[in-house]
Length: 406
Image (cartoon, rainbow, N blue to C red; front, side):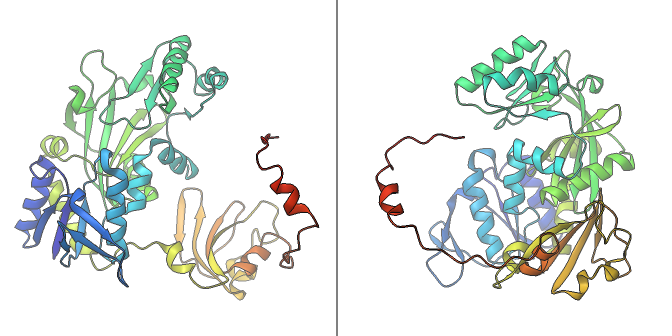
C-alpha cells in the first residue's frame, strides 16, 4: 500500500510514529506538506499537483489538518475523495469536527449526551442563555479555540456577561456551556479507530486549573472504559464522519458527556500513558479498509433526475405504526430503505418483516415524488406563471429602498 500523510509538521511525534508504523508493516509512505498541493480542475478528471508537478498515485491518505489551514486542507482532502483515494477522515467530517457549534448541533440531533450548551449573539439573550444551561458558573468557549485556549470559566453571571460582551465586541463567536462540577478538572480522551476504542486515558488538571489539556500541564493515566463510555465515543466519531478521532468526554453523574471530537488527535500523550501502539492500529485499519473509500452518498445517489435521498419519519398516529415494513406498502413503491433509525439504534438494510414504531426514521433512496407522497398529499407540479403587468418595472423602481424584516 502506498500512503501519504498530509502534515505540515513532519518531525512531530504523531507524524513520525505514523510513518514508522507504516514502514514497519511494509507500506510505502510519504509525508506531504498540505500547503504544497494545488487542486487541478482543468482536465476531464479531478487531479492534484504537488510542488508544481502532477501527483503520483496513492492508495490512501491520512490527513493531519491543522486549525489554521482547515479550509485549504479540507479542499485537498475533498479532491482526493473525488479521485477515489481512501481517507479514514473525510473532508466533511474534518469540517464538522473543527466547528464546535456545528459539531454540537450534529451530536445533539443524534441524542449524544453533552453539557447543556447555548449560542447567542444579541446582548439581551445572554442572561437567559446562562440560565438555560443551569446558571453560573458557566464555561465560555471560543469556537476557534484549541488545546484549551479560549476556554474560560466564569464564576458569576455578571462576569460571564461581561466576558461575552467583550468577546462579541471583537467579533468573536462563543458558546455558553454548563459547568460540570462533578468532573473536578478531569476528562477522558478515547482514541477511536474504525468501530472501536483502541486506547483511552484520563487527563487531570493541575492545581486549581479546570482545563485538563496536557498542553495546560495536565497529567495523564491509562483507563479502561465501561461499555457505556466506549459506545458514546464510537457513536460520536461515526456521527461526525470520522474513522480516526479523539473523543473527549466528561464523567457526569448520569454518564459520559461528550465535549469534543478531534479529527487530528495527538498520539504522544495517549501512547505514553497506555504503552499501546495506537499509530499501528491506525495504519492497520487503513490497510484493511483501503479498498472501500468513503463516498458522498447523497452526491452519488442524487445524480438521476427525479431521484434522491430523504428521511421519512413515522409519526405517532400514522396508520403504518405497528405494521411491518412489508405491510406498510413502502417497499411496493420506487423506494429503497437504507437504514432504520430508532432512538440511538441503527438497523441497516431493514427487511420486510421489520416492525415499525412511532418516531422511527427511515433513510431512503428513491423517486422523490413517491417519498413526498408518503408525508404530504400529492400535488401537481406548479407551473411557472407570468409576471403581472408592470411588476418588473415596479420592482426595479424600489430596489434602492430599504427593506424591513417582519
